[in-house]
Image (cartoon, rainbow, N blue to C red; front, side, top):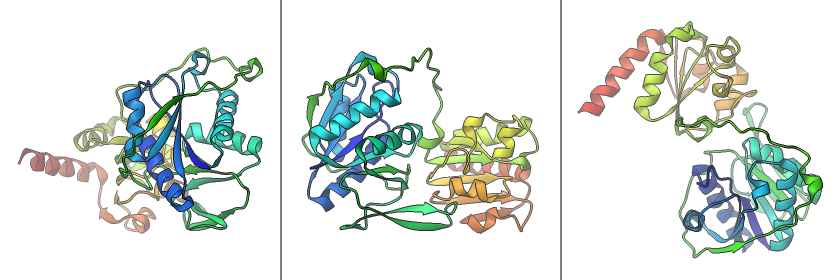
Length: 323
């Protein structure tokens, strides 16, 4: 028996997301009195793979087949299913990102396994296996009971944290059987964003809404994000208007994030937007309307024009950094 974690890599490197998943898996493994097995698909050097052992992965299965260079949902599902059988895994973990959302449901059907998506904490009980997730656009929490022998979970990013629990990890090459019928889809081209902090990885996010009045006023948003080492985001109306790229849209129908600090400038706080950022550990809102719904979710609020508050905030941060 084991807890299996699919650890996604980016150009042969792991990010915070993978270490958080291993940390989360390690806590589940303690409850089940078992061990953590990490599955890596792609060419990753041994030194990088061994980093997973710092967070509790006792074994790392490494798949380096060139045919798996690009994400193929059907083929990846087959590989992970074979790893589950090999390691007799009863819990399988994915990140609650595009990859996890694509593969976890397929794997659930193949293994006849119960699936809980967007989980926020370790199981409160293992008999029966009970996990917690947000529901009703993050207005409430639901306790989900999974009764199947094999359980699949996707973990919301930035909700658990990273905790070191060093073990001596064993790296084992894994060569699953691949069928030609699993490669019906051909990836012609892969375009990746480079040189920019991904929104879902950011610990600090600076976001703007229609209160910013136009795309020409986004300079201070970007400057503040750069000063704080964070990422920029926006509300749906802003991306719909073409002021900002859709990749920055946060909300129920966009990116669901949980940074340590979230700034909302000129965002009213529609329920769809709050559903995507409610996991933030601290929300700072700036809006001219004292009755804006965003203030109900905010930890700190400033009633004022975002166009006037932003320069003052940037100036104050620069003074602190200079001092």
